Length: 620
Image (cartoon, rainbow, N blue to C red; front, side, top):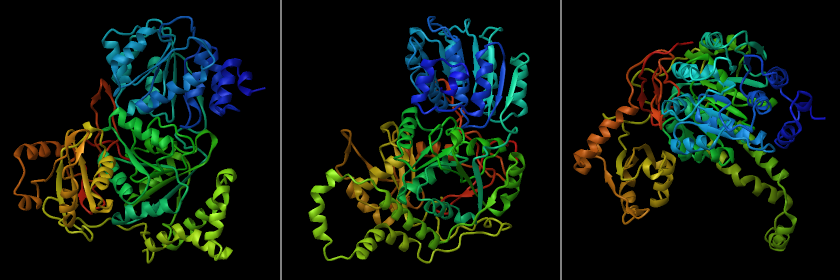
Protein backbone atom coordinates (compact mmCIF):
# COMPACT_ATOMS: atom_id res chain seq x y z
CA UNK A 1 0.00 0.00 0.00
CA UNK A 2 1.26 3.48 -0.90
CA UNK A 3 2.27 5.28 2.34
CA UNK A 4 0.35 8.41 1.26
CA UNK A 5 -2.92 6.49 1.61
CA UNK A 6 -2.00 5.75 5.21
CA UNK A 7 -1.55 9.49 5.75
CA UNK A 8 -5.19 10.01 4.72
CA UNK A 9 -4.86 10.94 1.03
CA UNK A 10 -7.49 9.32 -1.19
CA UNK A 11 -6.79 6.91 -4.04
CA UNK A 12 -7.33 9.16 -7.08
CA UNK A 13 -4.80 11.70 -5.74
CA UNK A 14 -2.35 8.97 -4.68
CA UNK A 15 -2.56 7.41 -8.14
CA UNK A 16 -1.69 10.78 -9.69
CA UNK A 17 1.29 11.44 -7.42
CA UNK A 18 2.52 7.86 -7.85
CA UNK A 19 2.83 8.53 -11.58
CA UNK A 20 4.88 11.61 -10.68
CA UNK A 21 7.33 9.41 -8.75
CA UNK A 22 6.03 9.98 -5.20
CA UNK A 23 6.80 6.70 -3.43
CA UNK A 24 7.40 7.70 0.17
CA UNK A 25 6.50 10.97 1.89
CA UNK A 26 9.32 13.28 2.91
CA UNK A 27 9.63 14.08 6.64
CA UNK A 28 7.77 17.41 6.29
CA UNK A 29 4.96 15.69 4.35
CA UNK A 30 4.73 12.76 6.78
CA UNK A 31 4.33 15.00 9.80
CA UNK A 32 2.33 17.92 8.38
CA UNK A 33 -0.28 16.20 6.18
CA UNK A 34 -2.16 14.45 9.05
CA UNK A 35 -2.28 17.74 10.98
CA UNK A 36 -3.43 19.82 8.00
CA UNK A 37 -6.06 17.27 6.95
CA UNK A 38 -8.01 18.06 10.11
CA UNK A 39 -8.52 21.59 8.75
CA UNK A 40 -8.81 22.88 12.30
CA UNK A 41 -5.38 24.39 12.98
CA UNK A 42 -3.33 27.35 11.96
CA UNK A 43 0.08 25.96 11.04
CA UNK A 44 3.73 27.01 10.92
CA UNK A 45 6.09 24.68 9.03
CA UNK A 46 9.82 25.34 9.03
CA UNK A 47 11.71 23.22 6.52
CA UNK A 48 14.49 23.72 3.99
CA UNK A 49 13.81 24.22 0.30
CA UNK A 50 13.58 21.03 -1.69
CA UNK A 51 11.93 19.03 1.11
CA UNK A 52 8.51 18.75 -0.54
CA UNK A 53 6.59 21.65 1.02
CA UNK A 54 4.29 22.08 -2.02
CA UNK A 55 2.85 18.58 -1.60
CA UNK A 56 2.77 19.07 2.19
CA UNK A 57 0.13 21.80 1.85
CA UNK A 58 -1.18 21.01 -1.65
CA UNK A 59 -2.43 17.48 -0.97
CA UNK A 60 -4.45 18.47 2.13
CA UNK A 61 -6.01 21.39 0.23
CA UNK A 62 -7.24 19.02 -2.49
CA UNK A 63 -8.84 16.87 0.22
CA UNK A 64 -10.47 19.74 2.14
CA UNK A 65 -11.96 21.96 -0.58
CA UNK A 66 -15.40 21.59 -2.15
CA UNK A 67 -14.80 21.46 -5.90
CA UNK A 68 -18.52 21.55 -6.68
CA UNK A 69 -18.34 25.22 -5.70
CA UNK A 70 -16.66 27.56 -8.23
CA UNK A 71 -15.51 30.36 -5.95
CA UNK A 72 -12.11 31.03 -4.31
CA UNK A 73 -11.69 28.77 -1.28
CA UNK A 74 -7.88 28.78 -0.96
CA UNK A 75 -5.28 31.49 -1.55
CA UNK A 76 -1.59 30.65 -1.84
CA UNK A 77 0.82 33.60 -1.74
CA UNK A 78 4.45 33.19 -2.85
CA UNK A 79 7.29 35.61 -3.70
CA UNK A 80 8.09 35.03 -7.39
CA UNK A 81 6.55 34.25 -10.76
CA UNK A 82 8.55 31.04 -11.14
CA UNK A 83 7.40 29.68 -7.79
CA UNK A 84 3.81 30.74 -8.56
CA UNK A 85 3.86 28.77 -11.81
CA UNK A 86 5.57 25.79 -10.19
CA UNK A 87 2.98 25.51 -7.41
CA UNK A 88 0.13 25.88 -9.91
CA UNK A 89 1.49 23.16 -12.17
CA UNK A 90 2.14 20.84 -9.22
CA UNK A 91 -1.43 21.22 -7.93
CA UNK A 92 -2.85 20.53 -11.38
CA UNK A 93 -0.73 17.40 -11.64
CA UNK A 94 -1.82 16.19 -8.20
CA UNK A 95 -5.47 16.75 -9.16
CA UNK A 96 -5.39 15.33 -12.69
CA UNK A 97 -7.73 12.44 -11.72
CA UNK A 98 -10.23 14.77 -10.00
CA UNK A 99 -13.18 16.59 -11.58
CA UNK A 100 -13.83 20.31 -11.72
CA UNK A 101 -10.56 21.43 -10.06
CA UNK A 102 -9.67 24.97 -11.17
CA UNK A 103 -6.33 26.51 -10.17
CA UNK A 104 -5.31 29.98 -11.42
CA UNK A 105 -1.80 31.48 -11.37
CA UNK A 106 -1.81 35.24 -10.77
CA UNK A 107 1.55 36.97 -11.29
CA UNK A 108 3.12 40.03 -12.90
CA UNK A 109 4.67 40.01 -16.35
CA UNK A 110 1.74 38.11 -17.91
CA UNK A 111 -1.57 39.32 -19.33
CA UNK A 112 -3.82 40.50 -16.50
CA UNK A 113 -6.87 40.22 -18.77
CA UNK A 114 -6.22 36.50 -19.27
CA UNK A 115 -5.93 36.02 -15.51
CA UNK A 116 -9.15 37.97 -14.90
CA UNK A 117 -10.91 35.82 -17.51
CA UNK A 118 -9.84 32.63 -15.72
CA UNK A 119 -11.05 34.01 -12.39
CA UNK A 120 -14.44 34.94 -13.87
CA UNK A 121 -14.87 31.40 -15.25
CA UNK A 122 -14.63 30.01 -11.72
CA UNK A 123 -11.71 29.04 -9.52
CA UNK A 124 -11.25 27.31 -6.19
CA UNK A 125 -7.48 27.80 -5.66
CA UNK A 126 -5.65 31.05 -6.45
CA UNK A 127 -1.83 30.97 -6.47
CA UNK A 128 -0.42 34.50 -6.58
CA UNK A 129 2.46 36.89 -6.14
CA UNK A 130 1.45 39.72 -3.77
CA UNK A 131 1.80 42.67 -6.18
CA UNK A 132 -0.42 41.32 -8.96
CA UNK A 133 -2.90 39.87 -6.45
CA UNK A 134 -3.33 43.29 -4.86
CA UNK A 135 -3.92 44.83 -8.31
CA UNK A 136 -6.75 42.39 -9.00
CA UNK A 137 -8.28 42.97 -5.56
CA UNK A 138 -8.17 46.74 -6.09
CA UNK A 139 -10.06 46.29 -9.38
CA UNK A 140 -12.83 44.56 -7.45
CA UNK A 141 -12.37 41.52 -9.71
CA UNK A 142 -12.25 38.83 -7.01
CA UNK A 143 -14.10 38.07 -3.80
CA UNK A 144 -12.21 36.28 -1.04
CA UNK A 145 -15.19 36.23 1.31
CA UNK A 146 -15.43 32.45 0.99
CA UNK A 147 -11.75 31.67 1.48
CA UNK A 148 -11.19 28.90 4.03
CA UNK A 149 -7.41 28.55 3.80
CA UNK A 150 -4.51 30.95 3.18
CA UNK A 151 -1.03 29.55 2.54
CA UNK A 152 2.02 31.79 2.86
CA UNK A 153 4.80 29.92 1.06
CA UNK A 154 8.43 31.10 1.31
CA UNK A 155 7.19 33.61 3.87
CA UNK A 156 10.71 34.73 4.81
CA UNK A 157 11.50 35.69 1.24
CA UNK A 158 8.23 37.59 0.73
CA UNK A 159 9.07 39.72 3.75
CA UNK A 160 12.69 40.08 2.62
CA UNK A 161 11.40 41.42 -0.71
CA UNK A 162 9.28 44.07 1.01
CA UNK A 163 5.82 42.56 0.56
CA UNK A 164 4.70 43.08 4.17
CA UNK A 165 2.19 45.85 3.34
CA UNK A 166 0.82 43.98 0.33
CA UNK A 167 0.30 40.83 2.43
CA UNK A 168 -1.50 42.88 5.11
CA UNK A 169 -3.81 44.42 2.50
CA UNK A 170 -4.57 41.07 0.84
CA UNK A 171 -5.27 39.21 4.09
CA UNK A 172 -7.59 42.01 5.26
CA UNK A 173 -10.00 40.92 2.47
CA UNK A 174 -10.19 37.33 3.79
CA UNK A 175 -12.49 36.02 6.58
CA UNK A 176 -11.26 36.06 10.17
CA UNK A 177 -12.18 32.42 10.69
CA UNK A 178 -9.93 31.16 7.86
CA UNK A 179 -6.99 28.90 8.64
CA UNK A 180 -3.51 30.22 7.84
CA UNK A 181 -0.67 27.87 6.95
CA UNK A 182 2.80 29.41 6.87
CA UNK A 183 5.81 27.64 5.35
CA UNK A 184 9.34 29.02 5.45
CA UNK A 185 12.91 27.83 5.02
CA UNK A 186 14.13 30.16 7.78
CA UNK A 187 12.41 31.78 10.74
CA UNK A 188 13.69 35.34 11.22
CA UNK A 189 11.91 37.61 13.68
CA UNK A 190 9.80 39.15 10.89
CA UNK A 191 8.26 35.77 10.07
CA UNK A 192 7.65 35.13 13.76
CA UNK A 193 5.76 38.45 13.96
CA UNK A 194 3.58 37.58 10.97
CA UNK A 195 2.70 34.26 12.61
CA UNK A 196 1.61 36.04 15.79
CA UNK A 197 -0.38 38.62 13.86
CA UNK A 198 -2.41 36.29 11.66
CA UNK A 199 -2.58 33.04 13.62
CA UNK A 200 -4.17 31.76 16.78
CA UNK A 201 -2.25 29.11 18.68
CA UNK A 202 -0.69 27.61 15.53
CA UNK A 203 0.64 24.07 15.37
CA UNK A 204 4.41 24.43 14.86
CA UNK A 205 6.55 21.91 13.04
CA UNK A 206 10.30 22.31 12.61
CA UNK A 207 12.18 19.86 10.44
CA UNK A 208 15.83 19.95 11.51
CA UNK A 209 17.35 22.84 13.42
CA UNK A 210 16.18 26.35 12.65
CA UNK A 211 18.17 28.13 9.93
CA UNK A 212 20.23 25.03 9.17
CA UNK A 213 20.94 23.79 5.67
CA UNK A 214 20.03 20.56 3.95
CA UNK A 215 22.15 17.73 5.38
CA UNK A 216 22.64 16.27 1.88
CA UNK A 217 24.54 19.33 0.64
CA UNK A 218 28.31 19.52 0.73
CA UNK A 219 29.65 23.05 1.17
CA UNK A 220 32.98 24.05 -0.39
CA UNK A 221 34.81 27.32 -0.82
CA UNK A 222 37.73 28.39 -2.99
CA UNK A 223 39.99 31.37 -2.22
CA UNK A 224 41.19 33.20 -5.33
CA UNK A 225 42.57 36.57 -6.35
CA UNK A 226 39.96 39.01 -7.70
CA UNK A 227 41.50 39.08 -11.18
CA UNK A 228 41.42 35.25 -11.35
CA UNK A 229 37.81 34.80 -10.27
CA UNK A 230 36.31 34.11 -13.69
CA UNK A 231 39.19 31.85 -14.76
CA UNK A 232 38.87 29.91 -11.48
CA UNK A 233 35.11 29.62 -11.98
CA UNK A 234 35.60 28.14 -15.47
CA UNK A 235 38.19 25.70 -14.17
CA UNK A 236 35.80 24.48 -11.47
CA UNK A 237 33.13 23.97 -14.13
CA UNK A 238 35.55 22.12 -16.42
CA UNK A 239 36.60 19.90 -13.51
CA UNK A 240 32.95 18.80 -13.18
CA UNK A 241 32.08 17.63 -16.72
CA UNK A 242 28.55 16.50 -15.77
CA UNK A 243 27.70 19.73 -13.93
CA UNK A 244 24.11 20.95 -14.19
CA UNK A 245 24.13 24.01 -12.04
CA UNK A 246 22.84 27.41 -10.98
CA UNK A 247 25.37 30.23 -10.59
CA UNK A 248 24.33 33.05 -8.26
CA UNK A 249 25.37 36.69 -8.59
CA UNK A 250 24.28 39.79 -6.70
CA UNK A 251 23.45 42.07 -9.62
CA UNK A 252 21.79 41.99 -13.01
CA UNK A 253 24.91 43.43 -14.64
CA UNK A 254 27.17 40.79 -13.15
CA UNK A 255 24.68 38.09 -14.17
CA UNK A 256 24.61 39.29 -17.78
CA UNK A 257 28.36 39.70 -18.05
CA UNK A 258 29.15 36.22 -16.76
CA UNK A 259 26.54 34.59 -19.00
CA UNK A 260 27.79 36.50 -22.03
CA UNK A 261 31.41 35.56 -21.32
CA UNK A 262 30.50 31.90 -20.87
CA UNK A 263 28.61 31.86 -24.17
CA UNK A 264 31.63 33.35 -25.92
CA UNK A 265 33.82 30.68 -24.34
CA UNK A 266 31.62 27.90 -25.69
CA UNK A 267 29.57 26.97 -22.62
CA UNK A 268 25.83 26.27 -22.68
CA UNK A 269 24.76 29.10 -20.39
CA UNK A 270 22.18 31.88 -20.10
CA UNK A 271 21.09 34.48 -17.56
CA UNK A 272 17.90 34.93 -15.52
CA UNK A 273 17.19 38.26 -13.83
CA UNK A 274 14.47 40.81 -13.17
CA UNK A 275 14.91 42.80 -16.39
CA UNK A 276 13.81 39.92 -18.61
CA UNK A 277 10.23 39.86 -19.86
CA UNK A 278 8.07 36.92 -18.83
CA UNK A 279 8.41 35.49 -22.34
CA UNK A 280 12.20 35.70 -22.12
CA UNK A 281 12.22 34.14 -18.64
CA UNK A 282 10.01 31.29 -19.82
CA UNK A 283 12.30 30.71 -22.79
CA UNK A 284 15.40 30.53 -20.58
CA UNK A 285 13.71 28.24 -18.04
CA UNK A 286 12.42 25.90 -20.75
CA UNK A 287 15.96 25.52 -22.09
CA UNK A 288 17.26 24.88 -18.59
CA UNK A 289 14.60 22.31 -17.72
CA UNK A 290 15.22 20.60 -21.07
CA UNK A 291 18.95 20.61 -20.18
CA UNK A 292 19.83 22.57 -23.31
CA UNK A 293 21.56 24.81 -20.78
CA UNK A 294 24.25 23.47 -18.50
CA UNK A 295 24.60 26.62 -16.40
CA UNK A 296 21.88 29.08 -15.36
CA UNK A 297 23.32 32.42 -14.18
CA UNK A 298 20.81 34.12 -11.88
CA UNK A 299 20.17 36.78 -9.27
CA UNK A 300 18.76 35.64 -5.93
CA UNK A 301 15.13 36.60 -6.45
CA UNK A 302 14.99 35.54 -10.09
CA UNK A 303 16.02 32.05 -9.03
CA UNK A 304 13.49 31.71 -6.20
CA UNK A 305 10.94 29.05 -7.01
CA UNK A 306 13.13 27.30 -9.57
CA UNK A 307 12.31 23.67 -8.92
CA UNK A 308 14.43 21.76 -11.43
CA UNK A 309 15.31 18.15 -10.81
CA UNK A 310 18.87 16.93 -10.39
CA UNK A 311 20.70 20.27 -10.05
CA UNK A 312 24.19 19.02 -9.17
CA UNK A 313 25.91 22.25 -8.12
CA UNK A 314 25.07 25.68 -6.80
CA UNK A 315 27.94 28.13 -7.33
CA UNK A 316 28.08 31.39 -5.39
CA UNK A 317 30.05 33.56 -7.78
CA UNK A 318 29.36 36.33 -5.27
CA UNK A 319 28.34 35.68 -1.67
CA UNK A 320 24.85 36.98 -0.83
CA UNK A 321 24.27 40.01 1.38
CA UNK A 322 22.33 38.02 3.97
CA UNK A 323 22.93 34.61 5.50
CA UNK A 324 19.33 33.54 4.89
CA UNK A 325 19.88 33.94 1.15
CA UNK A 326 22.76 31.48 1.28
CA UNK A 327 20.34 28.89 2.68
CA UNK A 328 17.89 29.54 -0.16
CA UNK A 329 20.63 29.42 -2.79
CA UNK A 330 22.11 26.14 -1.62
CA UNK A 331 18.62 24.67 -1.38
CA UNK A 332 18.32 24.67 -5.19
CA UNK A 333 20.39 21.46 -5.15
CA UNK A 334 19.98 18.21 -3.18
CA UNK A 335 16.21 18.33 -3.54
CA UNK A 336 13.88 15.47 -2.63
CA UNK A 337 16.55 13.53 -0.76
CA UNK A 338 19.28 13.75 -3.42
CA UNK A 339 22.79 15.06 -2.86
CA UNK A 340 24.44 18.20 -4.16
CA UNK A 341 27.35 20.61 -3.78
CA UNK A 342 27.27 24.31 -2.89
CA UNK A 343 30.45 26.14 -3.94
CA UNK A 344 31.55 29.66 -2.98
CA UNK A 345 34.32 31.53 -4.80
CA UNK A 346 35.76 34.15 -2.46
CA UNK A 347 38.74 36.39 -1.87
CA UNK A 348 40.82 36.34 1.31
CA UNK A 349 38.84 39.12 2.97
CA UNK A 350 35.60 37.13 2.78
CA UNK A 351 36.72 34.26 5.02
CA UNK A 352 34.91 35.87 7.94
CA UNK A 353 31.61 35.63 6.07
CA UNK A 354 32.19 31.94 5.42
CA UNK A 355 32.76 31.41 9.15
CA UNK A 356 29.50 33.24 9.96
CA UNK A 357 27.54 31.08 7.51
CA UNK A 358 29.13 27.96 9.01
CA UNK A 359 28.07 29.06 12.49
CA UNK A 360 24.50 29.75 11.38
CA UNK A 361 24.08 26.53 9.41
CA UNK A 362 25.94 24.42 11.93
CA UNK A 363 27.99 22.88 9.14
CA UNK A 364 31.71 22.97 8.45
CA UNK A 365 32.71 24.17 4.97
CA UNK A 366 35.54 22.42 3.15
CA UNK A 367 38.34 24.62 1.82
CA UNK A 368 39.03 23.22 -1.64
CA UNK A 369 41.89 23.89 -4.05
CA UNK A 370 41.33 25.14 -7.58
CA UNK A 371 42.30 22.12 -9.71
CA UNK A 372 45.45 22.31 -11.78
CA UNK A 373 45.33 22.24 -15.57
CA UNK A 374 46.52 18.62 -15.49
CA UNK A 375 43.70 17.67 -13.08
CA UNK A 376 41.08 19.20 -15.38
CA UNK A 377 42.45 17.52 -18.50
CA UNK A 378 42.54 14.14 -16.76
CA UNK A 379 38.97 14.55 -15.47
CA UNK A 380 37.67 15.52 -18.90
CA UNK A 381 39.45 12.61 -20.57
CA UNK A 382 37.94 9.98 -18.31
CA UNK A 383 34.52 11.64 -18.51
CA UNK A 384 34.74 11.15 -22.27
CA UNK A 385 35.85 7.53 -21.86
CA UNK A 386 32.96 6.92 -19.45
CA UNK A 387 30.51 8.44 -21.93
CA UNK A 388 31.78 6.25 -24.78
CA UNK A 389 31.65 3.16 -22.57
CA UNK A 390 28.04 3.75 -21.54
CA UNK A 391 26.59 5.05 -24.83
CA UNK A 392 23.46 3.24 -25.94
CA UNK A 393 24.00 1.62 -29.35
CA UNK A 394 21.10 1.52 -31.80
CA UNK A 395 21.98 -1.78 -33.43
CA UNK A 396 19.27 -1.56 -36.07
CA UNK A 397 20.21 1.90 -37.31
CA UNK A 398 24.00 1.52 -37.13
CA UNK A 399 24.07 -1.88 -38.85
CA UNK A 400 23.81 -0.47 -42.38
CA UNK A 401 26.88 1.73 -41.81
CA UNK A 402 29.10 -0.86 -40.16
CA UNK A 403 30.76 -2.18 -43.36
CA UNK A 404 31.92 1.32 -44.34
CA UNK A 405 33.03 2.06 -40.77
CA UNK A 406 35.02 -1.15 -40.57
CA UNK A 407 36.60 -0.43 -43.94
CA UNK A 408 37.65 3.04 -42.75
CA UNK A 409 39.28 1.57 -39.65
CA UNK A 410 40.78 -1.58 -41.23
CA UNK A 411 44.36 -0.28 -41.12
CA UNK A 412 44.08 0.85 -37.48
CA UNK A 413 44.68 -1.34 -34.48
CA UNK A 414 42.30 -1.35 -31.50
CA UNK A 415 44.77 0.82 -29.59
CA UNK A 416 44.95 3.34 -32.46
CA UNK A 417 41.15 3.66 -32.62
CA UNK A 418 40.90 4.17 -28.87
CA UNK A 419 43.61 6.85 -28.96
CA UNK A 420 41.87 8.72 -31.76
CA UNK A 421 38.45 8.70 -30.09
CA UNK A 422 39.97 9.81 -26.79
CA UNK A 423 41.85 12.62 -28.55
CA UNK A 424 38.75 14.12 -30.20
CA UNK A 425 38.05 16.43 -27.26
CA UNK A 426 41.10 15.69 -25.16
CA UNK A 427 43.39 17.65 -27.50
CA UNK A 428 41.43 20.89 -27.16
CA UNK A 429 41.54 20.74 -23.34
CA UNK A 430 45.21 19.81 -23.47
CA UNK A 431 45.98 22.89 -25.57
CA UNK A 432 43.82 25.17 -23.44
CA UNK A 433 45.29 24.09 -20.12
CA UNK A 434 48.90 23.83 -21.29
CA UNK A 435 51.03 25.75 -18.77
CA UNK A 436 47.89 26.72 -16.81
CA UNK A 437 48.83 28.82 -13.76
CA UNK A 438 47.97 28.10 -10.12
CA UNK A 439 44.84 30.15 -9.34
CA UNK A 440 44.69 29.52 -5.60
CA UNK A 441 45.26 32.53 -3.37
CA UNK A 442 46.48 32.68 0.20
CA UNK A 443 43.59 32.94 2.65
CA UNK A 444 44.71 36.36 3.89
CA UNK A 445 45.50 37.81 0.47
CA UNK A 446 43.93 41.17 -0.22
CA UNK A 447 42.19 42.10 -3.49
CA UNK A 448 44.12 44.13 -6.02
CA UNK A 449 44.84 47.74 -5.28
CA UNK A 450 42.62 50.49 -6.65
CA UNK A 451 43.62 51.29 -10.20
CA UNK A 452 45.25 47.92 -10.90
CA UNK A 453 43.46 46.92 -14.07
CA UNK A 454 45.42 43.82 -15.03
CA UNK A 455 46.83 43.45 -18.51
CA UNK A 456 44.25 45.32 -20.61
CA UNK A 457 44.49 49.02 -21.42
CA UNK A 458 41.42 51.26 -21.21
CA UNK A 459 40.49 54.69 -22.53
CA UNK A 460 38.99 57.36 -20.31
CA UNK A 461 35.43 56.04 -20.79
CA UNK A 462 36.34 52.61 -19.40
CA UNK A 463 36.15 50.86 -22.81
CA UNK A 464 39.08 48.80 -23.94
CA UNK A 465 41.30 50.90 -26.22
CA UNK A 466 41.52 48.15 -28.86
CA UNK A 467 37.72 47.91 -29.20
CA UNK A 468 35.18 50.04 -31.05
CA UNK A 469 31.59 50.56 -29.88
CA UNK A 470 28.89 50.04 -32.51
CA UNK A 471 25.18 50.90 -32.62
CA UNK A 472 22.59 48.46 -34.03
CA UNK A 473 18.89 49.22 -34.49
CA UNK A 474 17.71 45.99 -32.82
CA UNK A 475 16.89 45.52 -29.15
CA UNK A 476 14.77 43.79 -26.53
CA UNK A 477 11.50 44.61 -28.31
CA UNK A 478 12.76 42.40 -31.14
CA UNK A 479 13.14 39.53 -28.67
CA UNK A 480 16.92 39.86 -28.25
CA UNK A 481 18.78 39.10 -25.04
CA UNK A 482 22.52 39.69 -24.87
CA UNK A 483 23.19 36.06 -25.71
CA UNK A 484 20.75 36.14 -28.64
CA UNK A 485 22.33 39.30 -30.03
CA UNK A 486 25.81 37.85 -29.67
CA UNK A 487 24.77 34.80 -31.70
CA UNK A 488 23.04 36.98 -34.31
CA UNK A 489 26.13 39.17 -34.75
CA UNK A 490 28.48 36.20 -35.07
CA UNK A 491 26.21 34.29 -37.47
CA UNK A 492 25.66 37.32 -39.69
CA UNK A 493 29.24 38.57 -39.85
CA UNK A 494 31.11 35.26 -39.36
CA UNK A 495 33.34 36.76 -36.65
CA UNK A 496 34.35 34.78 -33.56
CA UNK A 497 32.44 35.40 -30.34
CA UNK A 498 35.66 36.15 -28.45
CA UNK A 499 36.22 39.26 -30.59
CA UNK A 500 32.92 40.78 -29.39
CA UNK A 501 33.21 42.85 -26.23
CA UNK A 502 30.48 44.25 -24.01
CA UNK A 503 26.89 44.07 -25.32
CA UNK A 504 24.34 46.61 -24.05
CA UNK A 505 20.75 45.72 -25.09
CA UNK A 506 18.22 48.58 -24.93
CA UNK A 507 14.58 48.67 -26.02
CA UNK A 508 14.63 49.39 -29.76
CA UNK A 509 18.39 49.52 -30.23
CA UNK A 510 21.60 48.15 -28.72
CA UNK A 511 25.34 48.78 -28.50
CA UNK A 512 28.14 46.26 -28.79
CA UNK A 513 31.94 46.40 -28.86
CA UNK A 514 34.13 44.64 -31.43
CA UNK A 515 37.88 44.48 -31.89
CA UNK A 516 39.08 47.42 -33.98
CA UNK A 517 40.35 45.14 -36.75
CA UNK A 518 36.87 43.57 -37.13
CA UNK A 519 34.85 46.80 -37.48
CA UNK A 520 35.00 46.78 -41.28
CA UNK A 521 34.09 43.10 -41.39
CA UNK A 522 31.04 43.69 -39.18
CA UNK A 523 29.88 46.65 -41.28
CA UNK A 524 30.30 44.63 -44.47
CA UNK A 525 28.55 41.61 -42.97
CA UNK A 526 25.46 43.64 -42.14
CA UNK A 527 25.35 45.43 -45.48
CA UNK A 528 21.94 44.69 -46.99
CA UNK A 529 20.92 42.60 -43.97
CA UNK A 530 17.33 42.70 -42.75
CA UNK A 531 15.55 41.39 -39.67
CA UNK A 532 11.91 40.40 -40.11
CA UNK A 533 11.64 42.69 -43.13
CA UNK A 534 13.34 45.67 -41.46
CA UNK A 535 16.73 46.95 -42.61
CA UNK A 536 19.47 46.42 -40.03
CA UNK A 537 21.64 49.50 -39.49
CA UNK A 538 25.14 49.46 -37.98
CA UNK A 539 26.85 52.71 -36.96
CA UNK A 540 29.96 53.54 -34.99
CA UNK A 541 28.84 54.96 -31.64
CA UNK A 542 29.82 58.57 -30.98
CA UNK A 543 31.10 57.79 -27.51
CA UNK A 544 34.69 57.62 -26.27
CA UNK A 545 37.60 56.99 -28.62
CA UNK A 546 35.27 55.74 -31.31
CA UNK A 547 33.90 59.26 -31.76
CA UNK A 548 37.01 60.57 -33.48
CA UNK A 549 36.92 57.73 -35.97
CA UNK A 550 33.25 58.12 -36.79
CA UNK A 551 32.81 61.85 -36.60
CA UNK A 552 30.01 61.26 -34.11
CA UNK A 553 26.46 60.01 -34.42
CA UNK A 554 23.19 61.84 -34.02
CA UNK A 555 22.64 63.61 -30.71
CA UNK A 556 19.40 61.73 -30.17
CA UNK A 557 21.20 58.42 -29.88
CA UNK A 558 23.81 59.85 -27.56
CA UNK A 559 21.16 61.39 -25.30
CA UNK A 560 19.13 58.23 -25.18
CA UNK A 561 22.18 56.16 -24.46
CA UNK A 562 23.41 58.53 -21.79
CA UNK A 563 20.05 58.56 -20.06
CA UNK A 564 19.73 54.80 -20.00
CA UNK A 565 23.30 54.05 -18.95
CA UNK A 566 22.40 55.30 -15.44
CA UNK A 567 20.37 52.12 -15.05
CA UNK A 568 23.52 50.03 -14.88
CA UNK A 569 25.75 52.62 -13.23
CA UNK A 570 27.44 52.36 -9.86
CA UNK A 571 28.31 54.76 -7.08
CA UNK A 572 31.25 54.30 -4.83
CA UNK A 573 30.62 51.85 -2.04
CA UNK A 574 32.66 49.89 0.40
CA UNK A 575 32.32 46.93 2.66
CA UNK A 576 29.96 44.00 2.34
CA UNK A 577 26.22 43.95 1.95
CA UNK A 578 25.69 47.49 0.66
CA UNK A 579 23.55 46.43 -2.27
CA UNK A 580 20.48 48.02 -3.77
CA UNK A 581 17.29 46.25 -4.71
CA UNK A 582 17.26 45.35 -8.36
CA UNK A 583 14.15 46.20 -10.24
CA UNK A 584 11.68 47.18 -7.58
CA UNK A 585 9.30 48.12 -10.37
CA UNK A 586 5.88 46.81 -11.15
CA UNK A 587 5.74 44.56 -14.17
CA UNK A 588 2.16 44.35 -15.30
CA UNK A 589 1.14 45.34 -11.81
CA UNK A 590 3.27 42.94 -9.80
CA UNK A 591 6.43 43.81 -7.93
CA UNK A 592 9.16 41.48 -9.05
CA UNK A 593 12.48 42.35 -7.45
CA UNK A 594 15.93 40.89 -7.80
CA UNK A 595 18.74 40.63 -5.30
CA UNK A 596 21.08 43.30 -3.96
CA UNK A 597 24.42 44.55 -5.20
CA UNK A 598 27.72 43.83 -3.61
CA UNK A 599 29.03 46.42 -1.29
CA UNK A 600 32.57 46.43 -2.64
CA UNK A 601 33.71 47.01 -6.17
CA UNK A 602 34.20 44.14 -8.54
CA UNK A 603 35.88 43.80 -11.89
CA UNK A 604 34.25 42.54 -15.01
CA UNK A 605 36.06 40.21 -17.37
CA UNK A 606 37.63 42.95 -19.46
CA UNK A 607 39.34 44.26 -16.32
CA UNK A 608 37.09 47.29 -15.76
CA UNK A 609 36.43 48.50 -12.25
CA UNK A 610 32.76 48.60 -11.25
CA UNK A 611 31.51 49.74 -7.88
CA UNK A 612 28.18 49.43 -6.23
CA UNK A 613 25.36 51.82 -5.55
CA UNK A 614 22.25 51.77 -3.44
CA UNK A 615 21.05 51.85 0.10
CA UNK A 616 22.75 49.84 2.81
CA UNK A 617 21.30 46.46 3.69
CA UNK A 618 21.99 44.39 6.77
CA UNK A 619 25.46 42.90 6.64
CA UNK A 620 26.62 39.53 7.91
